[in-house]
Image: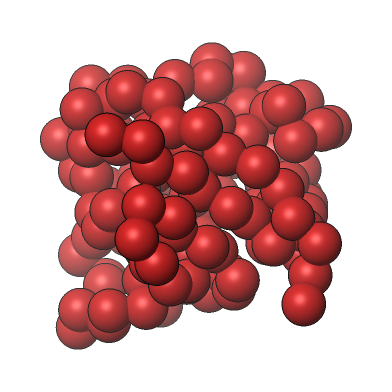
Length: 129
Ligand SMILES: [Zn+2]
């Protein structure tokens, strides 16, 4: 299965900026976009309703809005710097993809995209439209 995730630049920048400003706490963002064939194109980030920062990933799920088909997945930060999903993350997978931003949140190399099994999915950053 050849899947690719394309981040509009503003989306990637927003994730890194949010992760940096929440540090040393964890931050969570929902990712909006559209799926075209094997490509998922992320074009917006949403702050989850009632997001409670710093209490971990699972808090999000209790406060989630009804299913929205433009939500492709969730991004969260790893202040620890680990660029892979934890078992806990995989047990709370939501949507099609999971994006992790790892400390120090300085470059697009600090972003990783994963499927529900924790496998890495190829991604790239594209200019905004
Ligand atoms: Zn995590």
